[in-house]
Image (tube, rainbow, N blue to C red; front, side, top):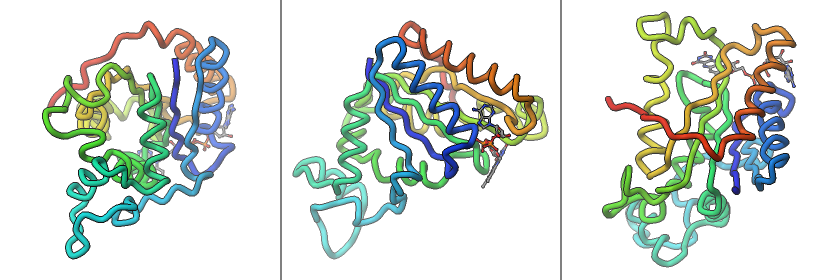
Length: 222
Ligand SMILES: Cc1cc2nc3c(=O)[nH]c(=O)nc-3n(C[C@H](O)[C@H](O)[C@H](O)COP(=O)(O)OP(=O)(O)OC[C@H]3O[C@@H](n4cnc5c(N)ncnc54)[C@H](O)[C@@H]3O)c2cc1C
């Protein structure tokens, strides 16, 4: 199996960084290939506009999805976008590792999605949800929070974490055809003991060693 990990954290020695290193070691230990896009280290440009393209369909008026469909036709994506598209297309399992920022993805990862999930190449025509472009491939989001687990329940202080994650799991991943696996969530790593943090790294590594046989989840509706 080929795994593609996308990391969005500005500090390599963060707990998010540790989760990625655990994932890489674990997946490789059972023979899977791992490709990593460490967005901050790559200095990935998250701003989406004409820079996404080497080709131009309409130089007078920029409409991103029109340019995306044209770039799909003429192989006209900018090299940084094309490289990420190829990594997604080549993988069987994609993992996003990020800290929850403002109930959502960090901007650099949202910008990566805005630029890389291009119309024509990653969705469009009849290709959505169960008939999506990435049908048969699996995706898993792995995140950390500042708040503890008890505030992320329905009716709780911050509300149901699964509802918070639905725009990502349904609106991006399922929309483009990925089979979504259960999220890996480490709540408030800052407030855990070293032993608890090590236990969550070990549990993540153990889960990934057996990931090939895991079944997808229902991401829910709105
Ligand atoms: C802009 C912004 C918006 C935010 N929005 C939200 C929000 O909406 N909801 C919310 O809940 N939180 C929010 N937060 C908080 C954020 O989600 C957490 O700070 C983050 O998830 C914690 O993960 P980390 O990797 O940064 O932890 P770190 O602070 O890097 O690590 C936590 C602890 O783990 C230790 N550690 C590192 N490596 C290892 C290792 N190998 N083994 C054991 N221990 C290790 C570190 O030393 C540290 O003590 C926000 C933060 C920011 C900056």
